[in-house]
Image (cartoon, rainbow, N blue to C red; front, top):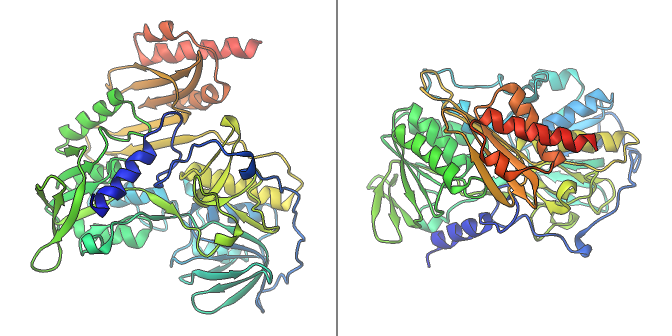
Length: 497
């Protein structure tokens, strides 16, 4: 078996679950229940572990956040709200930009140039949740030190000191690791780094892809998950010959049912997208100029492509914090319900944190902007106040595609809860469709396409409450609206007792 086939098979296996939702894209299953030895209970640390200088005229920093993504931006806002940012907080990032809403990179950022694509400063945090736009000037005004393009390369836990790539030494009082994930890549020796092969994790990656799209004729997207679906939809807007290739049987196999996936696949096909499902890639081939020209499949066939986008998952960016304490089951840095690691004074938030998913009694690592925001806020509040209640996250995923100007059909779905048990699908995708997951008579999860604001607001209440529901009655619903009314009535009955 080739290295690419092994990589994609590993990814496929990790996303094929016998129970529960895979809460992210990494190449390992996230949903094994932890043994007693993996649980942690070190929650007593509070601000004041080290008294560091509040000024920045030396190497001491009272609070340091490593990472410049969504979680860092929302953590910064929380520090400001608590009056603890000015002259106390430092953010260290490898990027040249202040924190921004990363989901835009595979959505509006990739719109064709004549269809009003998103650009900075338009999507700096915290605009994604309706908050203030935190531009570089905002950080200056709030007295937050920003260290750009200088990633942390090592940590001395005993001395509470970080070293950056440039050699800068930073002594911290409290440290928050918010390093996120890195894209899973194909090996270089089978063409993973050829010109024209793209991975998307930051603005530089997205800019490189846009440069390719401007000249592209044939685009191949590898991976049938969020990245694959969103990038393929963007390529349609550029009017490009687009093919999606993945080893699974249908799109977004870790969440969509076969029936639901078929609806979305039909929509993509109506927009000219071609699918190659259940196939594995042997290698990527270069043309005479060294640029990617084709993909060779394991069956010996060849697919021409001048632009390839690889979206086969991500890995938590734990380096150089491996000694802080990793979770070997779900990946990432192990934390408790206050995002404390097993090292006093060190916390981890966002994609990189392996945390107790209280509602389902298991350890999870969630690669999603909603968790990045909420974990940042919860961690900072716990650090700066007397808060002791544990993080109680409800899994939430969404996607929005085909939203550029002139698109005949915009797609926006939301999912809340856990995709376990049997499913009931209601609606004809015209445009609405809803899928309900029912386990042991309880409503566990709900996915809704093209709902109203009121309908979307109902979903998290249903998923968190898990009301008992009559599956037969739900199956007889003649519309999505009626099905949601049945679920709402079940919820009201549950709340009455």
